[in-house]
Amino acid sequence: MHNIHEPKLISGNANPRLAAAIARRMSMHRGISVDLVNARVERFNDQEIFVEVFENVRGEDMFVIQPTSNPANDNLMELMIMADALRRSSAARITAVIPYFGYARQDRRTKARTPISAKLVANLLTEAGIERVLTMDLHAAQIQGFFDIPVDNLYAAPIFALDIEHHFRGQMDHLTVVSPDVGGVARARELAQRIESGLAIVDKRRVRPGEVAEMTVIGDVKDQICIIVDDLCDTAGTLCKAADKLMEKGAAEVHAYISHGVFSGPAVERITGSQLKSVVVTDSIQANETVQSAPNIRIVPTAPMFAQAIMNIWQGTSVSSLFEHATLAPIYEGLYTPAG
Image (cartoon, rainbow, N blue to C red; front, side, top):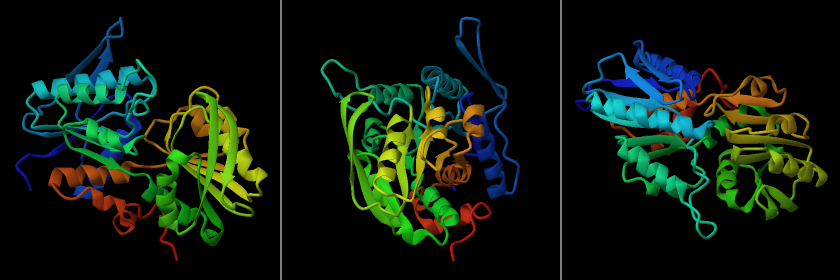
């Protein structure tokens, strides 16, 4: 083990529930209490962000847990200001744990005179003193290359596979994983391989951003339990239309597994009134009361995976081992019973 003293966790205001859950899981792993570093992240009257750390962090391995979800700009600034406070307090290393990486959808120039905001955010985080990033299901995998520091991109697919094997036991032969667009085929194929199911695609044609003109189902979904898999759900318009199209093509049921539940505007209302029997999301973005009370939305925890990843980074061992079923299943023991 390297000479950095202890892994220490600190959280902003974006998802304190997840941060507390990660600390609890690390306490279980280590056999000693792991608490979040005592700090305040507050705002002046003009909404200027102020951070004060109340504990000594000199020489410590610091992990800042802060998804950059809505409000994205506030949460991003909190993350950078916390990193600056820790750097100026002589922390040995600062790792940003960003369960949901905002601005990831702006990973390339789609039109003239537009920004590549994901690259700008990567530069800002590095300049703030962050030396490593731990995230999950980046919207575009190539964003890892925007950073000149190490980036560990975890995947929700192994957790989803455990959840599917648990909740669809006895029905596994009737499952078909569905990609809601051509761009998500690789993600859907990976999950399909994990659960040994068929694969289908909903090909959509847009007339303008946010408006779908036509959808076509590629693959046989008749009498199948369809599982749509995607990295994020924003307004849920495309997701609900895809479910309608699959039911129209003879699907028995439609479920969805989404890495990041952004759920803007009418998203929850649309899902509640849709043909989706269930929508499963991770807790990378803190769910509000509307999401928690939705009858067909279910939240799966990521704290066990993030806690183990933090431990592996601290100990200098493999993070990619968490992509494997054999490694992840024991971590989630108690939440999911083994298949068999």
